Length: 479
Ligand code: BG6
Image 1: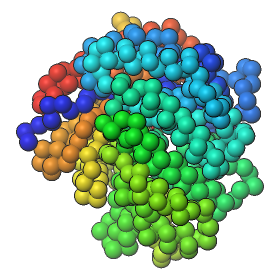
Image 2 (image 1 turned 90 degrees about the vertical axis):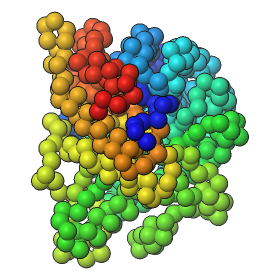
Image 3 (image 1 turned 45 degrees about the vertical axis):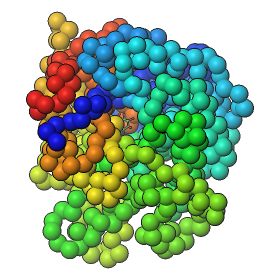
């Protein structure tokens, strides 16, 4: 092959809680993102018990895509997008999460938004759960700690699959399902599973709760995959994995084994999604730790059936780990066992920039699973400065993306991996998931808003907008 496939999907990626706003409009319920205040690099966001007057909740308005989606999609079309990855707010469809009937106004909003995309031949690519769920499911049920969430999620998925079966082909179940392994020390207080750890839960209890919640999510994902294929056999339903390959610091056998163990701990999720069963090393790990998880015979059958059609993944950075003598069993815990990579630079938010790691990741996934892949996030969070004339010279973003697309192309052309598409993160500036900041920008479209929520919300094209437009027009050949 000389380049990307003819029908390669080029687009951008966002998640509703980070861009939509309209948090209490159209019958939407309160979501877990709506009770999170703003933090910043090194300062954690806070979850308040309900909404407290006077606090800054950046996701309430976000960038107001709810009212401005027509203009934004027009700009995406100007860049030549052939797909647009977003999510559906569960709390817009089932405001509390446990109702029997969906909210028609919420369904209508996505109908209108998808129609607008399709008008420009932009395919929506939809994540069902992207760090967002009805807050009521947390206060009443404890989030994904509770098996009941499986039924609620399945109901939500069936409703949207049925409603949008002729408008959406590509779906994903849980965003970055594996990113919960490091939540014990994260900036974001909610785990991916809507769990808030209490202060009397020690490390052991937290880890156990995390694995239990993930198990319920994996069962829900498998049921959703099966249900989706019945509703429309042409659906392509993928998983979504946060890929940060974990290299050994040196070629010492101990470092090498530590890297194997770290990769096991972070990527077994893909094994379950793709192969339909837990890898033996995880079964052994649960036994060693004495976690007696609620995993039934019927769950095991469900996992076998509902296997995903493709692997969606995000790629921002790589990690490095190192063996130490006090850890003879290579027990890997994040971030305690991570060290800096002396060969690469970091962004202003401390993310290690490693373009070649993307080629490595594509090869790693391909060697393990031989399933088509979709890079559904990749990008550079930076503090952009808008000039007086409205322009933003984000050459550093162009450099980052050029380097990554070039490695991606080598993986396709030289290494022969099967890649469906590429949707860089935050194609339009939005609220950071980790910090709740506005100033950590990823977009090719600038949004006039600051961390305190001030600004006109006007959109303008950055230098990277034109770069990406030209890249898409040429199907990536110029790289
Ligand atoms: C991914 C998430 O982890 O990284 C996105 O799927 C998130 O929701 C993105 O926004 C970038 O992270 P951050 O913290 O810079 O917004």
